[in-house]
Structure formats: C-alpha cells, structure tokens
Image (cartoon, rainbow, N blue to C red):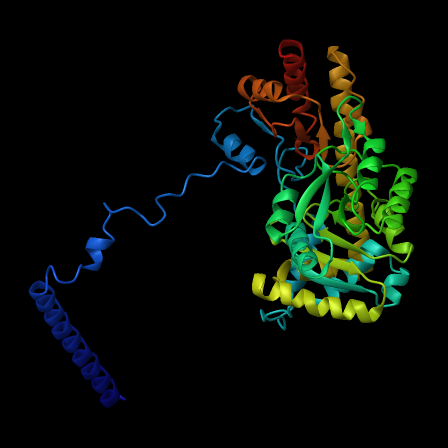
Length: 452
C-alpha cells in the first residue's frame, strides 16, 4: 500500500512539472508572436462591446412585476394583491396538511429512486388526473379515448397543446377571451398559433357579454380553436351559467370549433370538484373532441412544484394512441420528461380515499374563506358609502375580482396606500384577510371619490 502511495505521488509530481514547462513555453511563444495573434483576453476584455450589447432591458412581467415592486416597498402596511397565490388569515403562504402527509410517505419510502420518468410522465398521475376532471364514469375514459401527458403545470400544458395543434390541426387560429390571463396570448403565439379574441367581459355590467361572445364565435372560421376557462375566469371572476355553457357548446359543435379548456381552479372556485368540472364534462359527454390543460398549483397549493397535465379527448382509442405518440415528439425536445416529486404527491392524494377526503375538506375551506373575503369587502365598501354598485364583488367567483378600477385609481392606491395590484384593477381575493380588508376598502373609497 505504501509503495502504491509513493507511486501515485511521483506520478502527480511529474504531471505538475510537465504542466509548468508547458506554461513557460506558452508564455515564451506568446511574447514572440505578440501582434501576430490577438490574445483571448484582448478580444474579451471588460472594455470591449458585448455581442449582446444591443439587448435592451425587458419590462417587468405585468403580474410578477407587481411582486417585485411590492418587495421593494418598505411600508409596514403594504399589501400585495397581484399574484394569484393563496394566503392564510395571517397573510402567510399555506402548505396543505394533506400535502405534508403525502410528502412524508414519499420520504419514508426507502425504495423510491430519482430515476427519469417516461416522456409522458407518471402514469398513475395521468390516469387519476383525467378521472378527476372528466369523472370516474366518463365514457371517454372507459373507451380509452383520452390521452393524458404530464406537463409543467398549466403553462406547460397549454404550450405543449399549442405546439401539437400547430403541427397537427388544419386551422391554426385560436380565439381567446377578452380579457384573459396575460400569459395566454404569449404562450399560443410563441407556439405558432395565430391569436384572435372574442368578446367576454362587459365593463358596464361587470358581467358576461354573452351576446358578444356568441356573435364572435359564430363568425369564427370552421375548425378554429377556442380557449375556454373551465371555471373561475381569470382575471374577471365571471363565468357563464350552465344554461349559457350549453348554448356555447351547441354553437361550437355546430361550427366544428375545437374547445381548449384551461382548468387552473377546479374545486378552488366553488369548493366542489364536480361542480367546477361541469362545463368540461358537458363537452366531453357529447362525444366530441377537446383539449384540457390542468394545473394543481392552486387547488393543492403546489405552486412551485409545477404539476400539471394536458389531456386530449379523441373520437376513438386508436386516434388517442396516435395522438399520444405525437405528443411525445413535442415534449421530448422541450423538457425531455417531467419532474417526479410533485406528480407523486398528487398521485398519493388522489388514490388514497382518506387523503382525498382530507384534501377536499381543506380545498373547500380555502374556497369558503375566499368567498367570505368577497362578502366582507362588499360590506366594508357599502358601510363607507363608496360610490357605485359593488355587487359584482360577491357575484364573481374564484381567486380574482375584476374591481372596475382604472389605471389612474390603481396607481393612486399604490402610491398613497401601498396596495399593489395589476393595472387593470384585478385583485387576488386569496391575498386578503379580515385584518387587511379595512385598509383596502379605505383605499378603494379614496380612489373612487378622488380619481375619476
């Protein structure tokens, strides 16, 4: 053993001597050839122009930028109502108890490894996610007409769906509601789709412009893709009634329009998983085809785990099988395969009846607290005699309220009351608490009475 150590030491010494000689020769050659060959350091020194010198500083994301501004504000009364993330009554982020329990199971299982998932993701997660949205008794599932692939939350699911449509759908135009989540037009345009809008929100009634919606979809070309918010429309919180959904379905099927549902709030809007899936299930029940982007960021609080799925409901099992094979070709060069941890948490909760029941109870508690925040804000504005009709606050549903405040009023509230929201007047009801509602109500009252 000692002999081997000595040999190893001698070999290391020889390598160091050789390296030193090489450096001396390089130094000599460099001095002799100075001026013939530009040195690397002279080309890339700190004073030269970068190849990226032409790049301009991009503006902050209109939603995430709100948090950036909020974090820079030293005020003790500042309030962030911009980003859609649930907060407790104390204003703290919430990790669901059921998520902690599921995670503990993963930690305790010493047989678990960190190997790559298949391209389509965790099979059990995909199967249970489809059942959660379409229903365990869905004919589409029983007939194997649904293909589901795990993606990077809702955003990734939308992007994968968009790229699939560009490659395999004859009509490359997608109609999105006006307004909609700010990321929608970017996702689909970068995927290669032509993005157009259809009327959705009526600023006068602060409700649904149903007639405008029907007219715009009625004039859309046959085969066009239509993005639909499954529930809790973002940013308005305005959803069609079941009767209106049925008319939308009939119109879209008569014109062969292809539905693409974005489901970010199942169970989080009304507190009922089944109720929040009604619109999607109506379209699946008629035997037609559709796409669904699904996220667990809100309803399980798995924001940073990036857990989501894309499902495509097809006419036959054979078509579904071929569609899945092509989805693999989309995701493989995009992110190769999805992460395992968050999907495993979801799978454990969805397959275990006890954990599932605990999850639905916690989910309803979150939804109920948001609904109560709506009522309290409405009551606070009414008690102050704030000008205007604020009933839309309690009529809208889900995480967000479209207040109707204009850009000038929003800027005033940020400057004078340190309240941060998107410039369109959208506020996250999930970011409110009983303690902060009076401050918000005071700010809204002042903004409305002072700024027209």
